[in-house]
Amino acid sequence: MSGNGFEFFGLSGPHPPSWLPKPRAPFFIYNAAILRQNAADLRRMWPASHNRHTHLFYSVKANPNPHLVEEIAGFVDGFDVSSFVELEMLRRMRISEDRITASGPGKTDAFLELACSLPVRAVHLDSSEEYQALKKYLRPMSPQPRITLRLQLPGPQMRKLGIPTEEIRELLRTAPSRTFSGFHAYLGRELFSEERLSTTLATMYSLRDEFPMAFAAQFEIYLGPGIPAFTVAPQQLSMTSNSPVHIECGRSLIGTAGCYAAPVLSVKSFNTRRRIVIIDGGLQHLGSPLVSHLLGQKGVLCHALRERRESTAAGDELCPTVVHGSLCLWHDALHPSLMLPRDLKRGDWLAFAPCGSYGLTAAVSQFISQTPAREYFHDSSSTKPFTSPREISPATFQSYALSFSDRGKHAK
Ligand SMILES: Cc1ncc(COP(=O)(O)O)c(C=O)c1O
Image 1: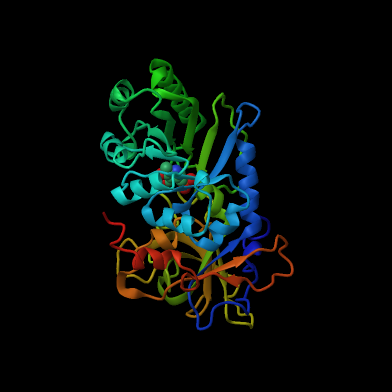
Image 2 (image 1 turned 90 degrees about the horizontal axis):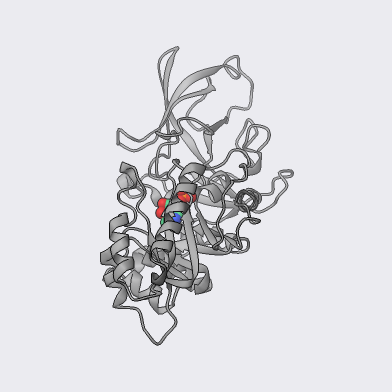
């Protein structure tokens, strides 16, 4: 991104553009050109020369808006889903089942049954119990999903995900021959490193060599890389694998393609050094504060758009500001320290980026029923002139509604 980083969202000027929602409402806007660029960068990052195949998958949980999923379907090889509803949504969108994998530590019977009945390309097992549950739905005479085993990686944050190595050995020793197609591992959340990647690949290959009979002829590797949303194009990784590798990208594909903006509700100044701004938005639209424990403020952009048209002495002066959301929750603190115009007032707007991933559907959306966020999509690759974006708000599509209307039916 050039300029102040908001050109691709039509929000780089000093004042709010005319297409902003009326009456004022918080919103997300996504840019297709950034999405496509991120996909190209991610493909370049994984050295195709070393792999017979590198497949780019999109992890739907990062942002399941079907308009975005439809757009993304044009340039990725497949999708990873984590629930019955995500899978049902892709089925209704007629995404071919061979382009879908099923992952996650909380698979219900209904999810496993649907994954087997389609069947999807692969199911990534997260526990031995899940394997027992899955067996009920595998139909011996029909096409079946590939089955991979998710490795549990070291570290306290990783214990929820995957199967401990000793349990994996037990499964590989006891399952009928050729039951499994390979392994899966989630390398992130912001803990991604080349070292983590190469030690994980080494573990996968050594388990395969220890139990060759447990695996199908075509051994495959699936990785949730957990790469932080980029602000610059990544370096190519040095890695070797002679098996097909599927990378399921979430935040690294869609994070920087989205921006979030919300109107200012109040400005509370305590003294010249301390000021709090409360916006009509917050954790009801975002899965987490903008500043992460691991990455700090790295890459977080904020831009103020002011309603006031005439210039004032305070107009260009900046002032340290804490930004809070509008929920009555102590942790609804979006940013601890931003330099924002001193003359900021109720009715102005703050825009934040990157905010394309883990937004609306990762948020505490029902708490105190504050203003819902709208969603917009801009599909021109040029930033000038910025034509009005297309609205893709939840009310106009079925995926979020699906999770409510079908509730119960899939809670087997
Ligand atoms: C199985 C799996 N694949 C892919 C992802 C996507 O991760 P990220 O958004 O960090 O790229 C996740 C995230 O939790 C995951 O659990």
